[in-house]
Length: 295
Image: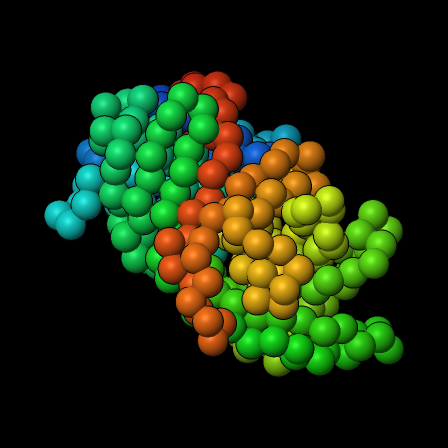
């Protein structure tokens, strides 16, 4: 322990988080602008009940490492490995498309899995292929397609199309994406009573050449992010169902990165062979000290 876990996180602060080994190695990675902290947790270091608070504190920008979310990589009996994924606010999420691509490259580069791998998430088994910085993931079949849901926000009616691509998404097509109030309207739609206590991620989209351009308000981050992998997939699938695009679809994120979404329409709002391809970049590796939690 380092100074008794920094004097028990400065006398019983931040849930008195303890770690089995300080300093704690981690990688920082970016998937099209979504940034993540990844920790090899196959040898347990943080107690399960303290993971959420550990993630929240470590993901704080300017105080911690700073990230949109944090992954703990763990052993699995049904796949090459499994993860526990926490958003920046400490909420645990079922799936993350850009994060999955980063995790796959991390696992390959650290000898945890081969270039073609399978890993377990709360959304199901994900398959991935790593080719240098380019990573392709095969998602589980999407569900809950619901078109033309009318929602009133701030005196304006929005048409929201819903689909679950591992996590729930709402898609709103707009005429002027650049001037859309993603943070304000996104917050209101994300928390709208029509979408239940869990809420939805909200993607604002517009046609862009033969593809799409999107901006996303993400649950758990509670702000606009530079990219959202499952949001890119959700938007492409809905746009295809509405006759706007065909597979493969190039989706340009607000960070300017292009993601490729591939799929096979099955009719009646169903899709198979859903894939997401794009870059997963290593930013740096380092070691966490308990002071990152106590700042």
